[in-house]
Image (tube, rainbow, N blue to C red; front, top):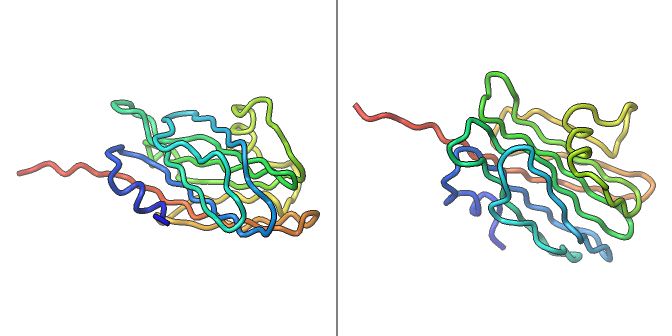
Length: 171
């Protein structure tokens, strides 16, 4: 399987986010992916389902010729839990940080508005301490988060690859 770093290597976008999800469950299939991009777009759409023991990748890129980054949310449903991933690879790293969040919701949760899910995960998160939600600001190019939902005794690790370009001008 190609890792997400190899997927984003040939991308010509100034800001891109590669997400690779590995399903380490024995009998849960992740399906019905949904996305919302606050800025940018999906260059490689999420796979339609990720069966047990397999992986799926997607790549999000900034919109060409704009001063915006690649920012949005991705979710997958299953019969046992719903996985939501928020990503933000901003154009302006002075004003904004690169960050991502992940949350596991118990049961099949079909979000009526992916924009509301994005705003919840980007701005607020849960109003209480919650082991099934984690958010981090990245200081390096790759990161991992682990979240645990004790009701379903499951965990997810997210490997997230970021790519940024700095244009060097010749002499």
